Structures are given as C-alpha cells and as structure tokens.
Image (cartoon, rainbow over all chains, first blue to last red):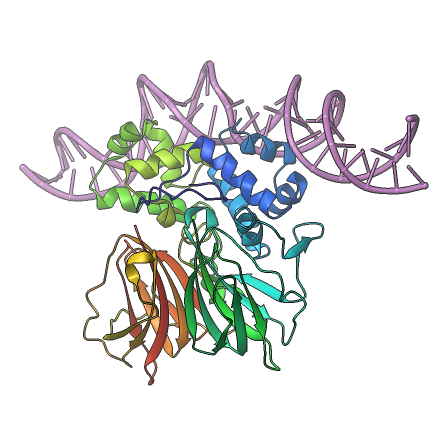
Length: 204
Length: 204
DNA sequence: TTTGGAATTCCACTATAGGAAACAAATCTC
DNA sequence: GAGATTTGTTTCCTATAGTGGAATTCCAAA
C-alpha cells in the first residue's frame, strides 16, 4: 500500500497486496498522523499498549494479525475527515480548516467536507461531498489550487463556481463540471439553502 | 453518515465486525481447499510449519501479520478479500441516511450512458451518468472488468451492486462506493423506477 | 474391513510479540 | 526559566507464536 500522501502516479497494480513490514508501519503512522492522534489515543482505542504501537509503526516488530486488524478498525472508524490532511499536501496556499485536539477537525464556516471512502492509501481518486453554507461569501475572494484534476457535480442547491481563468459559472442541481484543479477555484452558494456538492479529485 | 457495510444491524458475526479468527481460519482453509492443496503444500509454499498452518486454520492461534501475509500470497488472495470481514472492505461507501436491511440479488441491467465532459483525450477521469433500466435483469450473469478504479454515486432509484469478490451491495440515492474496477462488477435496478447513477472512472 | 495419505494433536524448545515502566524529548504552564 | 505535562522511544520480562518430530485420529478408496 502507498503512503497516505499519494502524490505519485501510482503503479496502478490491479491486485493490491498486503503491505510488507515496512509499508505497514508507515501506513499506520501516516493514518494516525493524518487524524492528529497520539500513540496513546490509537493504542487505547485499539486496546493495545502504546509501546507496541510505537514498535509497529517503526517496523521493529512483526505484529499479530489481530493487532493489525484492530488498528485498522480504530484508524478508519473515527472521523471521516481523514482526507483533509492528506489532501492538504496538494493544496498550496491555504488551509480550509483548523485542527483542534484529538483528531477532531473543524470545518470552515463555509465548507463542510465529508469523505466518501476510506483506505485512502490505496486509492487514487478522492471523492467527497461538501456542504456549502448558504450565501456565505466570506471566502469568495480566495481560492484553492491543488495540482491535478477535479470533477464536480451539484447534488442540491444553487451556486457559483469561481475560477481563476474563466468567468463565474452558475450551477444548479444536476449540473457538473470538470476542470484542472491547479487553476484557482472556489464556490459560493447563491440560494437560501446550503448547497451540496459531490467532488472527485485526482492528484497530479 | 455511516459506512455502507455497517447497515446490517443483525448478524455482526458475518458482516461488519471481525469474526476474530473464526473467519480468517475458515477463509484460508476454504482458499486452500478450493485449490486442492494440502497443509504441507501451502505451508511449504508460505515458508511456515504444517502444524502452524493447522492451528491458524482452526483458529487456535493468533497468527502474526507476516505469516498471514505470506499465506495470502501463497493462496493468491488479495488484501481486500482478506480484510473484507476483519477490517474495512475495499468496497468502501457511505450512505446519507439510515434504512433497513438489504436483500442479496445477483442481476444485471441495461444501461444508458451520458458523458459529463468532452475532450476526453485531455482528461484522466471519466465522469458519466448512467440510467439503469428498472428491474432489467437481462445481463445478470455477465459483469464488466476494466483495469483501474471507479467511484459510483447513486443519484436516484435503488439498485444492487454485485461484484466478483464481495457480497452484493444494496444502494439507494445518496449512497456511494469506491472499488477496483478490475474486479468484475455490475448493477441492477431493484425498484420500479430507473436508477440514475453517477460514475467516475479512472483507467489503470 | 484394510490401508495410506491427510489432518490434528502433543511435545520440547527457541524466538519474539506485547505490556509495564523507565526513559528521553519535546510541549505546555506559571 | 523551572517545573509539570505530554508524546514517543527504549529497556526489561512474561506469555506465547512458531518450529520439527512423532503419535494419533480422520477419511476416502480399494
């Protein structure tokens, strides 16, 4: 399995094999870090000792299957916002969230993101649904850039997609758009209800 | 939102929670039997002792991750298959509201595809909307394989996604799933209305 | 039934996984 | 800045995973 920050174009092997000793530790550490959890947090959640977890992450031990299984559960069951951290590596310029303690992630006043898959390390596309607060224009002058491509589909609501190179695009439920996400982009809801948007992002 | 796999309140033993060795041993044994191999064959191939393998298959030991990994390789089991019952499945999806248990149907439909972007040559992802004819089961015995990954989001209707390696997955509007499209897959609408599905496909 | 290969159990033994606690290194308070 | 607190690493030590070998049971075919 690949690290969480899979910037690389990936070998696209269709058969995923179990991570070898080295990859396993890194994968677990990445996942934990991505959620802002401490060794103790995860260890306790998985019902193991934090020293054990430390050794596993550093590949100093050959963990039992049961332990690995519990760790996977613990790391994937928590908050679904795991992706925010991993996607952050692609975003240059601005963070759209602020971290509090213990893996909780506070969304911005404007956006609320919800990841649509887990086991990010093994996936190349990143699908998520964003709720865009109604008529919130607090960030409409700043946009996001992250190398790669992005597909967007409006589930509900009405919004305007602002981009760096094109004129703003008014969109309604059912509309969709495909663009290079290296180009600055951002959304503003223009109706009274929050807009719900499905995004599928592909890193460059 | 909850993971799709967790929508089955009833038998936690089989679906969601790790059957704690029970399933692991059985899975390995089944795989071995399916190939007509003896304990010795597999043990030697995986570089472990016969007695060890016997214990693992009978859930009399908590095997190490490394051992399980080697067994997997020997038996040509892929990670998703291995973890499908213990950890999160590789088919990971989310639903946006609760509902009751699901049936298991293995049928396929007729599709009508609608591309959501043009200039395909310059794009890596392929987004399109498919209308799946209501209760059309004409192709129930054939599925599609194409190297790469695929994300699917149900816009409306009710359908079952059946795949080569996993149990059929009942899905409703708002549900989504991410899977390796090299694995055989197909859909069938199970309600009276045509199902509308958004697909984003990424070639290998 | 007999028979021969396959599977399970038992045994003594070694290596090590995993936990507790000590330790170190940051980070936070006042 | 000193002390307290938190996070991660590194000792130990015990429990057990994993081993080959041999005895025993299982099981299907002759």
